[in-house]
Picture 1 (tube, helix red, strand yellow):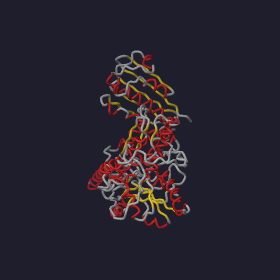
Picture 2 (tube, rainbow over the protein chains, first blue to last red):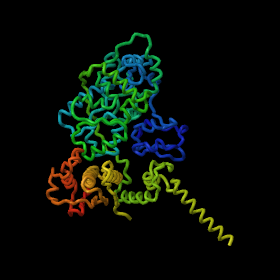
Picture 3 (cartoon, helix red, strand yellow):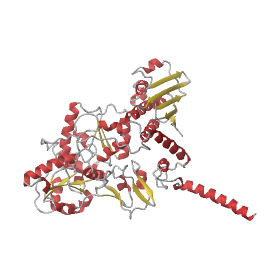
Picture 4 (cartoon, rainbow over the protein chains, first blue to last red):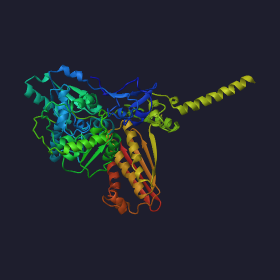
Length: 426
Length: 142
């Protein structure tokens, strides 16, 4: 496995080299070079902001295709609860789950059930008093990666519980083995995901040694196929068993609300998340005990691989969930939900391993930055003047990449030429 | 060859929404220089408290931060009202902040004591009606 696997990639033919993604990337992981966007692998946290903002649809997420299902004898779909808000006029989860059977799956297992287990274990852990004063949710993998590169001091505040999908995967496989009598490897578990960060966290897991999921399929890839099957006449099987709290994880605030006590902040949108994490770092939120931080606007319903507008989807999820009992599902699971490996600080923003050299580079950056126009126009291909200065020192760019610097230089040159030619005449 | 880097910030005393920008910026620089997260935490909390004090009590001021591999040296200077009784001001829970500021959750009287707690060297001098000067050093563990 490659050290930095990413789901988010670029369709070079569609990229026009504009500055939309460049300016929005929360970790300054994109540069435009030779007219095309380039992702700096080490910096990308797979939040998918670039996918959402690209007007040319050049940013995409690599996920598996439905043909992967053929590799397995028994195929189980694990839909993220965000899927339930995608279809107009559909407030019945069972219809959506049955439609999944219609497109080739043999069974479904709701990720929302894994979420309910995570909620129960979180409550126990909070009660045990082993956590820090402020606990940060570990549900959003993009936020986890953000913390590991930008907020090393908050690593200890992160809830050391695996994400709902891994818990659900364990339960789904157990259930499938029991139902079919097949061996574990004959069973294929497919996550229906709203976002690239979750796809990446399956291929390159953060808190487990190996993911229990066999494939990841994006919501938008199966959307139309599902839409055709949703109101089919075949008698629906009863597949729905997650409750209100589990399903509500799709919306921001769902996870925190399910804890039923303690003051919390539920923050959505990666730039808002950064602001809240800054406040935690400055010890300014001393009356808060839990922080649910989700990279996408509205929470997972706003994932870049969803189809429906996130506000519409949110309202629909609310309608759907309120018909369900609070915790319909409370089965005890003999599975260790705690992290198998600790999260580590990933110092990718470092200028140099040696602190002396780093300081020299920093003061050089400062000098170069002072000579730049400070417009942050992005024309040079770096997201801001500050970043260009950094890129120059890192030997990834040159000063004349700045069009204003280039213009100055051309002007000086032409003046010199002028003087020279006059001298020649004389 | 530069052995240290100097960062200077004008802290605007009229705009509360900007308070915290200097400490946030210093934090980013320290991360890029590869300082230990614990050192960064001490610096950013001490500096944030100092920056807040400048905004709340002194109508702004100037922050100068010098970063070298050995230590982070912070100098906070203002031309505000000054502190009459420094010893009293240093006590945890003592505060002269207005009710309005306290309603916002500031002015708990922990600012100066936190600044002292998180720095290895803490020197404060003040003159009434002239201003206050705070010098803080956080040493880098080597």
